[in-house]
Image 1 (cartoon, rainbow, N blue to C red):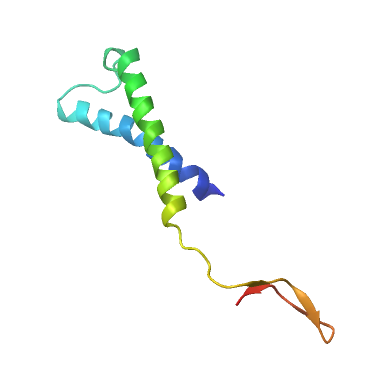
Image 2 (spheres, rainbow, N blue to C red; image 1 turned 90 degrees about the horizontal axis):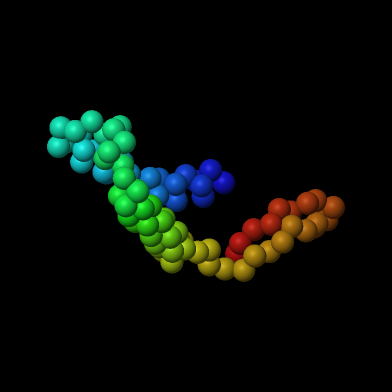
Length: 86
């Protein structure tokens, strides 16, 4: 469950981190309010949302799928046999 939350969150926060690194490399203090105007934050938010949505779509498209038939859990001779994919 945490992977389902952390991956999109990391993709969303990546543009903000990249912009902060850009500010540091330009010898600017990244925590000053003047660098985080409404327009810049809006653009970074849209880029982050797009990255998160595209990342989830790519994960869904390229995720490995189980091949075979699911056999549910059942009892054989009084012994519980767990479910499996054959």
